[in-house]
Length: 114
Length: 112
Image: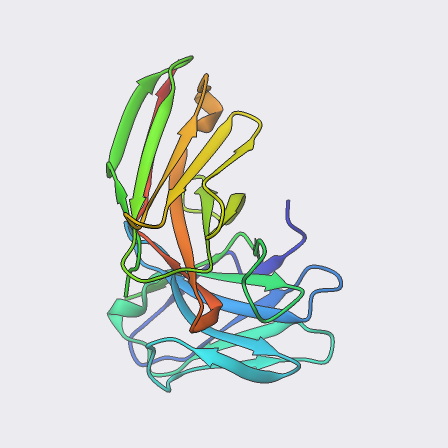
């Protein structure tokens, strides 16, 4: 166990809806990154938050947005859900913005869009 | 976009045998990390090797890195049924040092 928690575990939504996923980082970690993992693929970087600001972003449209709170927990919001958004969403916490050391991943939230 | 490509995509071996997985990548890296994922759940960090290192060991794991060939290999010795999982390599590039870039992974099945 890494100490990183995510909620909910599973979620089913329909196209066009909005969803919020939550992540609590490991104690003492001030940086949270979000990844999307489609079935049979490796995770793809969505964005990173550090001190409540977005620090880097992958190739994802603006309808993917995030927040980080003063306690370093984080939310991933996806608007106007599409079928291709069905995936496992993983968050990872770390002590610094650079990934020069291991990242601690949560168990993920599996999102199904119908 | 995927940076690393693991080979093979799937590997099935008997308990006690060694398992070797390879990873190739395209651009220069700061470090390369290997992760394990059980049944579509969270990723567990296994080992990190920096660009100026050639080999690293951790328990039954041995990782090599050849920056001239832009490739890495992960060897699991004396495999166990509990090693059954997907294994991913992930690279860190100097220009984007805030993110991991993953390959598609190798599905390892260890038969008892």
